[in-house]
Image (tube, rainbow, N blue to C red; front, top):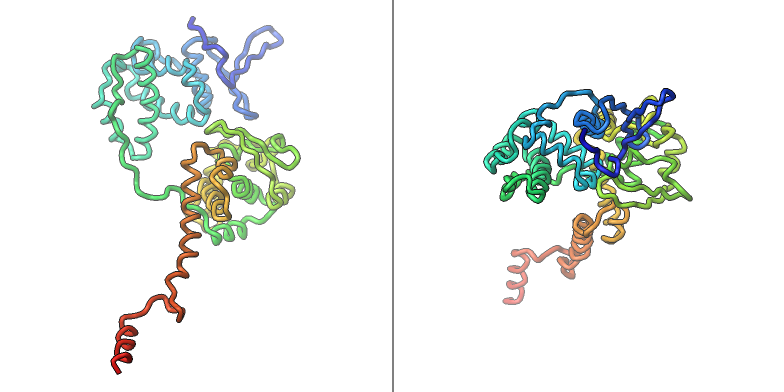
Length: 363
């Protein structure tokens, strides 16, 4: 029997039944418990654990590829046992688990040592630019670890670049008209309005917004550790949000909830929120677009990079500077436009006016 990693993997809980039997569960936050039925510390147990962490139901499955020493599936299994893997955020692990699942299904029995740069590039090219970016990030993490652990002689991802991403601004930020349309369709007292105001007046990512509840609020300030970066953000509950939360409906454990009052996963919430937007006549609007709108609004009202990082859980200055530069550019442009006016309040002398001025001087 293989040893389970120490310390015990996160979200894994043990229970002793009244008959003295040990039962294992995975529980994410305050969500439902997922039973693991395989024998503890086996590869099947780890497979069920990883499936539960990835958000799917735990399944008692046979994974022969994991038992082939040196196979790609075996390598991924060893990677999951490392501190390097468990230190990744839960959101990152979920994303990579989904990628690894497809990799194992298509090539799990191949020997990792025989994976070449050409193999990686071919797999990258079969994906869209966004999918390719996530695929390359996951495979780089796997093979760089394997190379350092001397499980492979060379890293096949070395030198493989990402596909060029489409040149756009990503999620569209919401306009004032968008906000008005949504609020008109979903007034205070609807759960859809609770969803919107939690997003709009905290600036949280949807994965954090769905976890936010009364237990996080003390003296009118919500403190929550963000899922993606691990940063703790302190967010005063503004009067507008407090009014909406008071009217509800909210869940017992989280402000954002479904029809049954239970918490939502970020994936299901994303789908429900898009439906609410469409019902309000808004297309291509998303939860992340509200976060961008909140950051833009804060920057335009003079928030510094340090203040933006405190609100949105960023670090390093890169993201915050994108918003402060845009806001500063707008302020400078507005202030500088007055310098284009002359003393007669026209924007610039026209060629014809110059000719008339010259004619008057000749007379």
